Image (tube, rainbow, N blue to C red; front, top):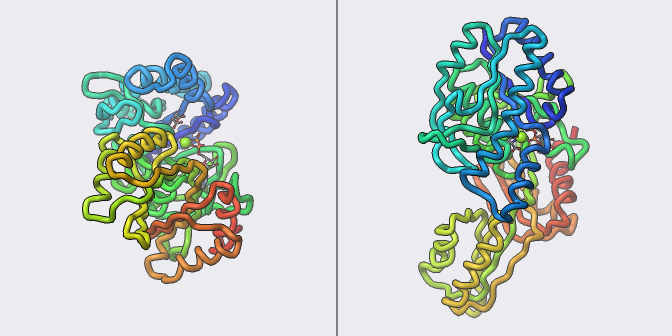
Length: 404
Ligand code: ADP
Ligand code: ASP
Ligand code: MG
């Protein structure tokens, strides 16, 4: 008898009718003899609605009470799904994160899972029940409710699969797999049969929101066999797996777009040792994550220093930079929120030279100016003007032969 963890995202449980359709799918798998743990998200739009309520009270909301609020969305769907299963004669029991005892650290709003106690869940599975678990939430050591960051139900599912040593973790969503790029942007994007953990991790980090980054980290670490599938139609989906399970690596597996970053430049700072840490030290101390960094030295010997941060941190970072600019007698601070980061990802890059130059030429042929570049072993990212986002993605998708 195999143990399967299934996860259904917001759209898949967006209405009572859809929850009933999920119950039918679970009933079928259960009838075939699988032991089933089902993780659900809140109904689509619910987490945003709750956030909106909180923001009416305080513009900048975070911390403990936000997690008490946001975790209610998933508590609704676990109860409704368990009821829908019971109504179909399938024994089921719902669990909040705290009831499972998904133990996390204390970082409210972006907690990390430390440990899962599967004792109660296992007892229910042994008794033939379907276990329905609230995604996105846990408890810290003191029993406070925590949440795992947006999209966190994926991570709950993979962590449950790892803790219970499940045979497969199936992520049911509103697309029928992982595509070469976001199918909502490029219509001839192609579904991938398989993709490596490493590539999926890069794609998730670079903007493909189909899986939360941490869920892929978990899957890779614990070698969970992870599959992305459609809630609405049958099909093989996409298997996320180790490189040795993929016969022939594609040169490029995917193209991603990230519009969540903003760029800051401090102009005319002295070009001397320690300058990068003088600028970035206070930014890091304010808990602002810096992504891409470029430094240019001009003819006059002074340097311009540019970096990107998440758009939500833009104002905060700009304030810090203006203060530093005063101290360093820099010429000016410039900011730009209208940027996009486009990346190509593929393990095949390791053994092939010339990908970067092909990428830059294809963008140049469309008259798209590259503002920043960064590379790793299996990815190349560029920052361009936001207005070229979609053209840039489509151009690279075609250039690397990814179209279906
Ligand atoms: P869920 O609510 O089920 O968790 P999400 O909205 O979080 O669903 O993730 C699914 C969405 O991810 C798709 O609707 C699609 O627009 C988007 N997406 C972005 N990049 C990709 C990609 N490379 N492959 C598939 N989907 C992608
Ligand atoms: N409901 C949460 C969110 O909207 C978690 C999830 O859907 O995975 O981010
Ligand atoms: Mg999601």
